[in-house]
Image (cartoon, rainbow, N blue to C red):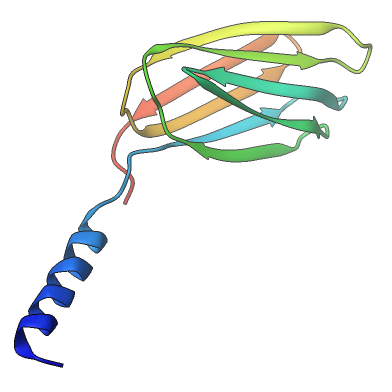
Length: 117
């Protein structure tokens, strides 16, 4: 391989390693004594979810933000009641850690902005 090709390859590799898209590391924890189902978290321009979370269980998910808006959670209780909760506003390109804790008295949202290590 010629020196010019080696330099070009090295430049591409370094550029690729230095680039990382911002993301939010999310956890949804069920701190109730019963399972919850049909869990959906809506964020600007997309959503994620899971079929069910057992009592005391946690679901983890990473996502990238596009746009700015409130987070929203919808889930179904063990008695088939649909519950909704509105969380904090997240902004386009933001990154950090999101904890959503479903409890017997409602939903607790905790968002900590910051860079991932």
